[in-house]
Image: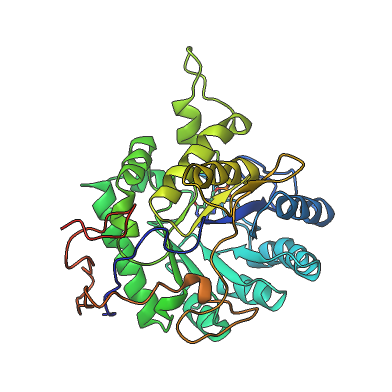
Length: 354
Ligand code: PMM
């Protein structure tokens, strides 16, 4: 399959991860279902997410909560397209959260610049061609099956390595279908065919994914495993709105692992965590503005470091890895493409740990 990716120094994609703000234009998503179900309310919330610091607003029109049933493509498209068109018109960068090629295509035509596909290419064989033609980034999430049956698919030998292996298969399939490796972002899919223990184990072993060398996105925001962690003494799970601090803690953990992005309902707590972390590192780009809002330095440049390509809407530059270190030559491998030929990279220094 593809050539090998290379180990990277930390942080790989800029001073902090990209922040995707969640905008579900659905009546039934687990945390915000129904809140932004009409176009005007959704656009207003998208603007608020951007004002709160989201770099990208991730617009979805179909709930993926466990047990959710599918809506038809036309309904999904009619939910997301007007919102994406309006937000794009107002200068907000949008991704579309869909598993359907026809919805992705309509969303891209309306101005979306990233396709966030929770099926990682498995739900619709037409998706690869749509993203390849549009030359946009494609978020491939680890996925075993649709939401109505995914809980029954949560069986693993070793969840972290199984997710990694299955993601590599999804990457191979995406590339075989025409996708450009430079456009791929991978995501372990917390909560998708995974119970709480599985999610924690994937997070504990995040390095297994980051070390693949592709950008990694983490979507932990307000998910059920956080509610369980923070349950009352009587076992009542903490409701979604009370899971923000835990979400920000995971954003910070993910940032320290060198992930490319986090997908969150509230941008500010995660941005505050990044700013605090950068300040502890004595980063001159990390400041607090006169309203007390953290202003962590923005993510990496939108300029391709190799060929100087700039400019919307196909800004792949922020996804590009730094050039491979001459000390660590790329090695051709099959789907098992563990990268670090000279041992794991020490994240704080970028030096090989031997
Ligand atoms: N989680 C949800 C929806 N879309 N996309 C990606 N890439 N990763 C995720 O973890 C993810 C996602 C479900 O959460 P929501 O109902 O709050 O949107």
